[in-house]
Length: 223
Image 1 (cartoon, rainbow, N blue to C red):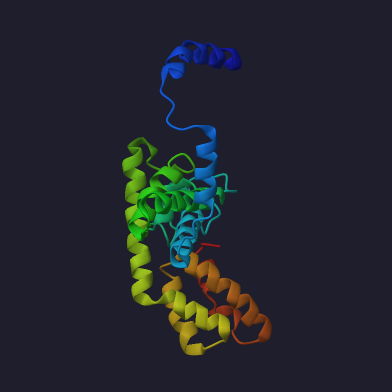
Image 2: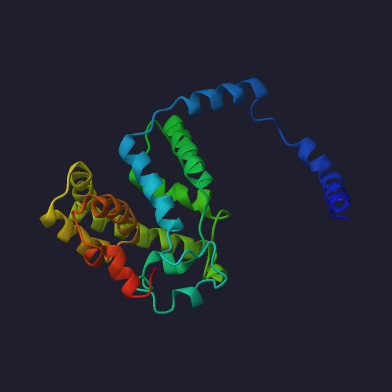
């Protein structure tokens, strides 16, 4: 059975493992883990990690429950050229926690952690937690996905779109809503957030169903 094959393999390498020098004792390791857990990571970097994982999870056609999988699922989709089309199965929420722990460890070791570090660490946090459409390309494909994701985040920063969304959360503005819809057409996660607001505005009579981003995506066959 698989259990006995694993046991036999472990026994065959046992002497090699036992011969390895001990780098640190368990008490030192336990103390290091405690110190890492107490490290504070900048709130903007935490937000970056959350958005990064959410972007890799996002699919307007709900790939997680669809019988059809990417790339077939992506045919005709408005977001067919987006990062989401490169992903067959996205990461779970645990990926965010793992990435945060890696960021804390980096800060503990080197005294700081930067946005560049987050993208580098993401390779280690995500490689075995998601499946890519071009999985045959291995880590190189994941690095390509992360480069695309970084470009998207830089575009978001230039458009100041999260600031626009924050202002809309504070109160409805017809002018900002129009601008937000233009952004949502090109940004799936932003569109998901805007649709949540639209539900509230519809209930209050601030917008009409036919003018919502949800309706536009439905007409395009995305929802």
